[in-house]
Image (cartoon, rainbow over all chains, first blue to last red; front, side):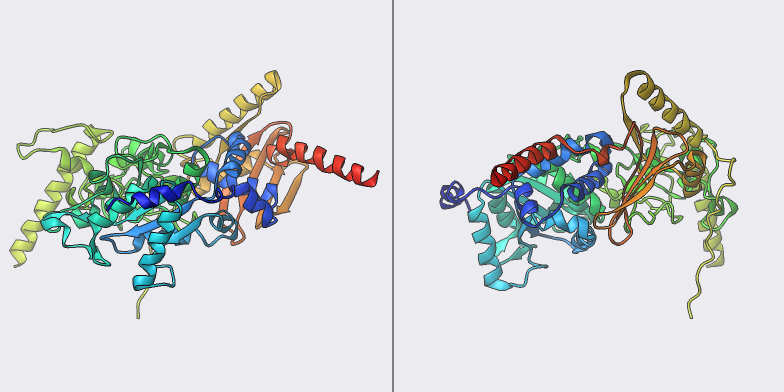
Length: 367
Length: 137
């Protein structure tokens, strides 16, 4: 579905205005904008002293066109993303982003919506940012996901062809996620397994933190593709494990663990490692940015991390088994040392397995 | 009728923090003040990125106390700039209109960078004032 006519249109017309021009037109004061940037640089763990330089870069960036393509998804990522729009200050900047296609949010439907997408892509061919949401089914020629008479694979390839960069939001678009969970009947994969010739930024999570999605976009506008880790995640948001940044880490270091969700350790706020917290092997920013406008996050609410920003998180064993229990092979040998503090964890895993066996035996007896 | 689950996370008693995170932060602030004193170099510590329990956060605030300046700017939500009891150490908190904390950091410097006019602001001022003078002439 290559569109040579689209490419010929890319250089026609006026260049898009800069964000600074739009802010000035709307009477947004520079200090208000500086404040907005202070929030973004804090999210990205940049030194606060760099805020002014970041603001200057962002003002100079051109207003981008965004094409948001949903594939095999549940709309949870979009629900999360829109939660970052609510503060009026953030909406300032996002009013300057042209969200040219999102079939859930836009009023148009059917042929009108698809025509609008084609038009928007033609107008900004080679320059727009493509946001992908959901996995792409590849089994049986991709017939398990289609809209407007095209399979998702065809739609993705066509849209990616004219994109300057692709942002895969959610664990599904990043790695296949829930759709790719065993036995993966639709052959679901992430965007980067299909598109290999464009810059791709993965923003995984189920859903991702809204501020991480918007922060990644703004960071891209200001300074291009950020530094990525081996899973194509921005290091600014995914550079540390949940465990490293967790306020309960000190209890882990002291060997103080909750053994159940209602024991003394749980009430004292001790480490949730033995209850299956995947913080040690999960890279994300929940521990610092938190959820619901910084109100709290799963571990602060008393539940372990599920590891939803990691590839194949759905197939990594039970959510209530210590992470190191997955490091054991059937013969009881340690298969790897992915988790920090493997020795402590190994003991916890053995204890948890013993407890699980005991409970199973009791259940059998009762039956 | 559903009942709330009585789940409580007990706060740590003041002065009984495990890991001495507050203590470490205080040392970092002292190091920043020494750099300011010796080289005039300003620095900042982002409080949102520190893995602190809510009670520890309060401890840091209590430790730093309050100084002479406490001003609030209305910029689509309050921005509060407070001098702490230690001159040169500022506590800055940016909130959105709905009360969400956008950024919160300790800045160590002679004055908060946020209040300073940026170079491009100054260039605009030069141009605008010159234009006005030309018009007046």
